[in-house]
Length: 100
Image 1 (tube, helix red, strand yellow):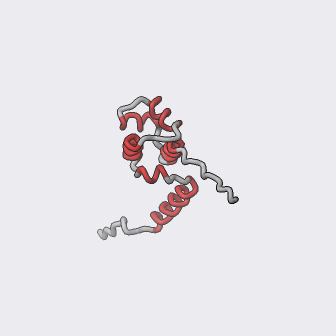
Image 2 (cartoon, one colour):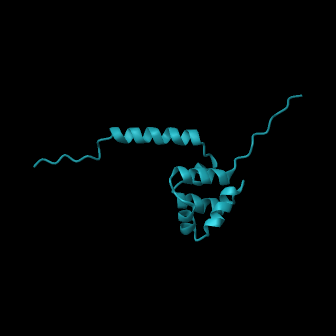
Image 3 (cartoon, one colour):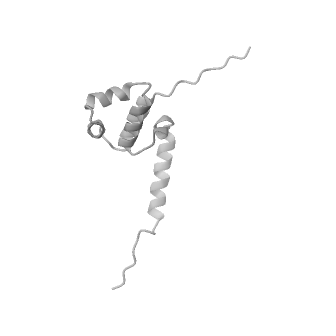
């Protein structure tokens, strides 16, 4: 008989907190955007599950999609940040050539 191991469930609240921290946003800023107290945001971040309506609102406040929160992987985020930052350093399309 084959024994399948159950994957641990994603802790959505923890994903929200880590993503918020990586974006450099404080809980009170998210709370202000949502019209909630900082304590309520803290409670959301401690919750393993978050209802879809709340998740949508929190995602909007953070400027991300709910799916990004659900599938949050810190290593992937760090990799993307590093690559996007390095790519932006090499992108000169925003520079304007002004001749006087």
